[in-house]
Length: 283
Image 1 (tube, rainbow, N blue to C red):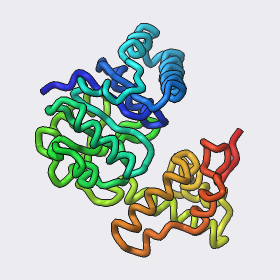
Image 2 (cartoon, rainbow, N blue to C red):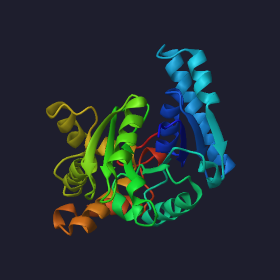
Image 3 (cartoon, rainbow, N blue to C red):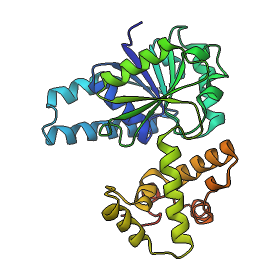
Image 4 (cartoon, rainbow, N blue to C red):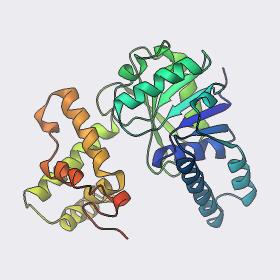
């Protein structure tokens, strides 16, 4: 089976970026959101990002127009039924993801590959609610999707070689570099990254240094493009906490214990850039 039609479920930060890169690469894309308002916001973001690429002369206006024309907007999960590949990109809630996969399994054609963009939830668990666990795989794109080259491809316990091959080809077709990872909590990217962010939170919590000092040390001393606390604000502190909870629960190891400061900030609604306030404040 060749993948020609793609459905993306969820039009948030990750979902609109995934729809963007598939449409730009020539795939017919159905972008599915729960409401017309969310859908228009997602489509507007894609349009702005394509316009930015035109201004930077990375693509032509004709390319941008063609990509937008390939995106069908929908608020009905039934519209995923003809897709060869479905990428779920809703927020990190395992019950919601499993509910969506159960519905997709019922609605989509039997040969369709069902992928999750989850950053930490076990693919095997998600696949377990379907009757096609061999056709379920993790496709973890990085933020911002149009710019970042990596895609983690996560094999569940039942993921077939053919499913992996199709996901690998799809990732390469949109200009990404796929890396094979097995199904363990946090996979690779977040198993390494989030404990670093969590430790930076502890350093701030314990008064080791200011947030600016912590970020400057990592930028100038370790050559990171962004400090860990700045990065946490970009990712979303609620997302960081969710991933740390998955690591803590999955490994039952105290080294993954979420920092109390991180918990407190999430309880306060200080989630980072998306709420204009996290470790830093934003306009």
